[in-house]
Length: 486
Image 1 (tube, one colour):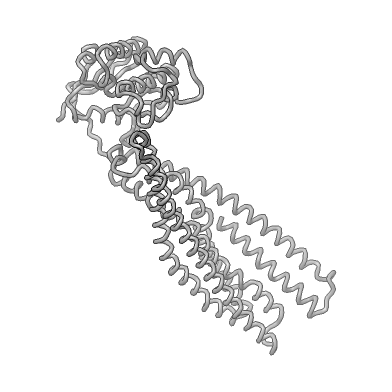
Image 2: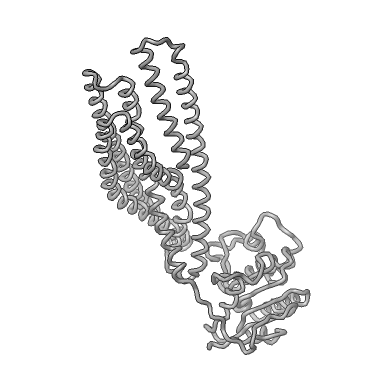
């Protein structure tokens, strides 16, 4: 992108020189248009070349920004997974959601425009000043004297903008968080007839965000005006100097026109840095928080210590029903985290070769069927078997689960999670099935049915591993591994 921008600046210098030659030859030397046709052609080709370069810049910058956002978003999600549920519960879900979506999307102006423009300015501006110096030293001195004024004003405006952008992001986070909490508590609010009052509160928070946004826009337009005014006054100063020296013959029209046409291009990169800074400020503010999360995950890389087992090596037996048991806090779930690679280590299983049910059931707001299959394509036979294996006989597929499983019981939620794991195992023909406390919320009758289902999977050739405290499940296991707290 910087190389393309440099080529565009070279084309601009060619256009300025050829136009100066054309005007000088035509109006001063009295040459005909035909004799100056070469200047017209070269200037025209340079203009077309510059237009092509600008298009390529936009194309390359968009591609680069998309790649950066994908990489950064992937690192963010990986870091959140490494930090774990405890960290997630201590932080605002709304803020993390905002950072992963709107916040990272706002990074595009930063990587596509601001950062390349900053490097381009550092390289090209001195080259243009040297080019002007080779033609007119007085104009170059004026440029060197006035150019620092623009970065100084940019720094002053940047200090104010940074604080305002942070306030805007905080206001949007507050709005998102409040709206999410209202959605979560809407059934309770409706029961106590307090839902309508939230409309006014959300309106007030929205007004705060609107005020912060308008403040950012005012500062942006004001700073743009200040930078444009400085650049215009500086170019005008050079123009007056050239005009006075043209009158007494101390500078030729060719040199004067060339310098005058090139002077705005010297200020243009720095002005664009200022303009792009405001467009990128929101993304830069959000990215700082994203990078903080990534750094926190890197600093707190989990040091997983595999718990001690009664056997010298915990090797689960293939085509058997294996059960891990032990006192609470002894690290049973840590074994699953390590096997699945959730602790940052390399996973033991391939993704498509394992079906897993976590201890903490997560269901989204949708139908029972949507929570089980997770896609638009339904394998009816596998779905029917999964419902039978999970003893899910008291819910219909079209029943709504509700937000945070509000419309079903804990046992029903656990059996939906079981059915999801069974459905995945049946459709993907997975070799491994991992269950963390699969019957903890079930009555004995349904629990026994689930245990029989696990044994059937093991007999069919799958390796089934379950973590449990339930005695009837432990007694049904082919192999038992007891984890000590030591």
